Amino acid sequence: MVMQPYQASCHCGAIKFSFEAEPFTHGIRCNCSFCKRRGTMVSLVPGEKFKFEAQEGALGTYQFGEKRAKHYFCKNCGNSVFSESIRWPGQYIVNLGCVDEVDTFALETTVFDGKNLL
Ligand SMILES: [Zn+2]
Image 1 (cartoon, helix red, strand yellow):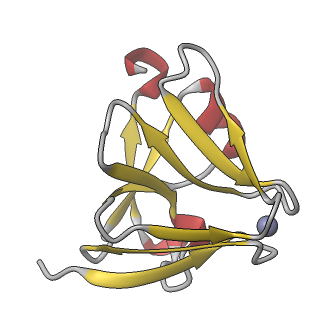
Image 2: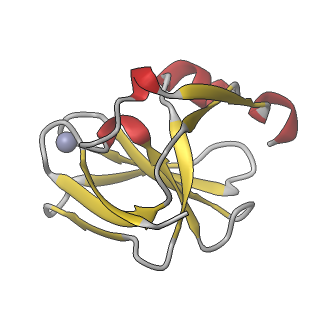
């Protein structure tokens, strides 16, 4: 599969990010206590071409439990944007809803059992 460039942003545009990934055919929904509440569809993408820029003071970080992951969000509009986890070093977990070209409602859903695995 060929890597494609993607552009993404939070709702207000204070955080923008871009990366390269194979075209998305499915998204992941995780049933952990955090993802269950935020309701996002995510995907793991390679870190090599991942870049982000955030307006000053816009990037918030949330951690919980054993703090193995950093969940980034926009302090202005509240959107979850991406996460990093020591479980998947060198990769980013992106909120596919933030990605311009991705219709999350057209993707197949894979459930990740974060409730029992994280
Ligand atoms: Zn925002």
